[in-house]
Image (cartoon, rainbow, N blue to C red):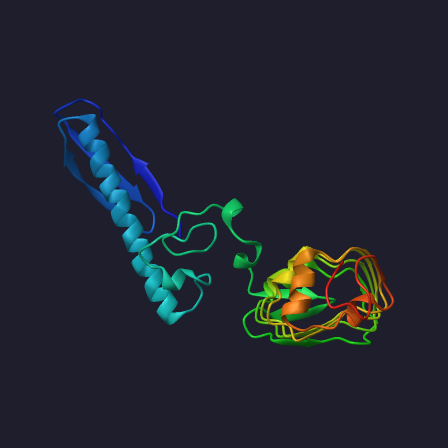
Length: 237
């Protein structure tokens, strides 16, 4: 909804100033001002009025047509910031990645962020790396990507899935070391990373999780090259 604001100013103090707004809204009248500053204040007030009228029109359109962008209809008399927060003042750089999304795509399948709690993709011929966008699915409780050909490192973003109780990444081609962020998965009661190509030391944060949640070291060690943990270890060395 755009308005062409055309302002004709005869800038002589004490004379009648003519103000015309052309577009969807037409306002013509005489504004008597003593100073240019006063005239500018009145223009600002008029622009504010136009904004409020636009918002009121948008409100009616929300109620009757549903064509207004998502989020605007809940924020009639405020401003949506760049993070789509009503009345906020955040810039795009300050937004969390997931704050701007309602769904993510993993291996060609679209998942709703709010409602997805279970992903079972074992033996689906998956290739490539685990997309970092998986971090947005914060309501996940079960994630099974086993028996595929997934490559690359385990993304540290997986540590944001703090509702996970079951995580199976075994029998893939994952490389690199365990990210310390796995230690954030404090609700885990089962994990499996067996038969990948993981190397190096298990971070202290992951070791602490193993001990606190009574998770088996066997599912970290078998098929990988871990240097500070063994199948029968009670803790990392």
